[in-house]
Image (tube, rainbow, N blue to C red; front, side, top):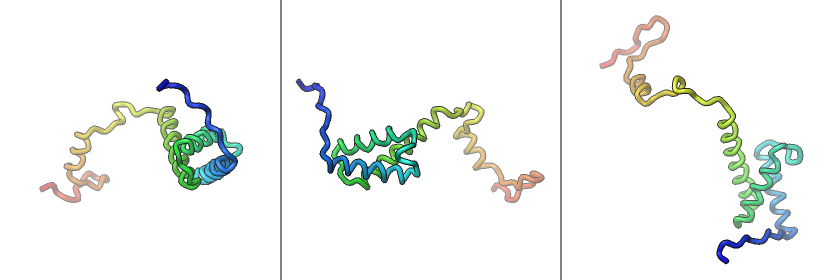
Length: 116
């Protein structure tokens, strides 16, 4: 059957050593305690995912897993944080207008350079 479920992988002791080293290394890169951090489970699963995809270099797995974790944290923070309203967004027209405006020092509105 083409869409049958794959069996759960069985890891050797050397496989576990690679993943444990990669997990500890990724935790160090992220400056997190690998035993007590509340995101440790997600990081461990990420390490296992990259191992299952064929990566065997623990330093490479650690770097890629840490990078993915940073991306996930950024995404989580962006989803939880306040979103910019239309008033807070800057349009391309506003940027173009600001670039074409004469430069002023901001104190008395006197221009420092004249627009040609």
